[in-house]
Amino acid sequence: MRKDISLLILGWEFPPNNVGGLGTHTYNLVKSLVKKGIKVNLALPKGEKEIIEGVNYIELPKLSVKYGSKLNFSNNSNNIIEQVENYKKAMKIVKDYNFDLIHSLDWLTSDAGVYLKQLTNKKLLVAMHSLEYDRTGGHPWKYIEDKERYVTEKADIVVAVSERTKEEIVKFYNINPNKIRVIYNGINVNQFKTDKKKKFVLYVGRLTPQKGVDHLIRAFKIATKFTNDTYLIIAGDGPDRDYLLNLTISLNLQDKVIFLGRVSDEELVDLYAKASVFVMPSVSEPFGITALEAAASKTPTIISKQSGVKEVLDSAITVDFWDEYALADYIHGLLCYPYVKEELGEALYRKVTTLSWDAVADRYIEVYNELLQ
Image (cartoon, rainbow, N blue to C red):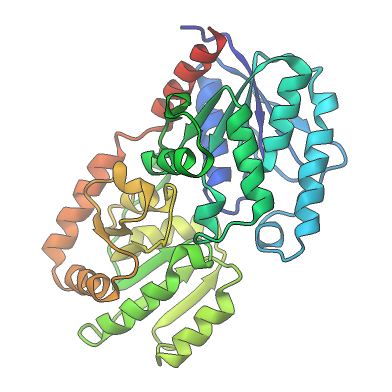
């Protein structure tokens, strides 16, 4: 197996400019690949970035992405289209760098990846971390849907973050399943900590319809009828913030639900460590790194059956996102039975210790070698 591979990764998010899991994935994968001897050229829009020793950063000209909610939640679709087009144009310069193959991330770099493949005749791997169908709750924006279909058709190999995502790529874009490899996300357990649990329920993530936070709030209302001395803490931001605030008020939960907005990495680690229960109630979730992060803190975790992470986090409690009474029952049970809560936290922790980013990098290197053969 070759390890002297020179790789070009077409990135978008990157710490500290994270929105969801894509930036976390990119950072940790690149760090592990470099450690294993892979030469990584990482193309990114202008912006502050954490430096990984050994990585050749390529700052793309005339491209300055507005990270966070300004990009992903903006109603100004023309800005997104313009940025995607600018990314593609920048490949005329990138083509002159030395690399063996192209690793493109999600639809945002789709046109650029295919265009660069045509310019250089190098093999293209595209990693699909989510689909527009998931992000929009089944109401895709055709522009993005077309980009996803185009890149999955033109790529030499497609990587999906879960079997769930693989099945959707086959279903929605009619891609041959033999062309798709499933590589799950990993976790650096040492980045997290455990602490004495406080009596609060935690959600971490974007505030969008896809994430099902309204179902969690309604379930929490039911749970408070039996467990009134607890709180729900919501860490994250997004276009549904005002709607969720109004829902909280309408349910008379304004003293029980705390909206923190976006929090720092240090604050997030502390929240995971102290939470009694973590809930990821997604309506549709390709993977769900936050569930791994909670498990790394020995925090009992409830995830929706509609999430990809359940394929690896088999100790987690699963519930249909819409079943608010069942979710309330699980929340109440974990809050009231410390022994069960502790046992579940330990089981989840044992599982995530096997899901390292080094193992993820090894799996990607196998696929790189498959392409280069």
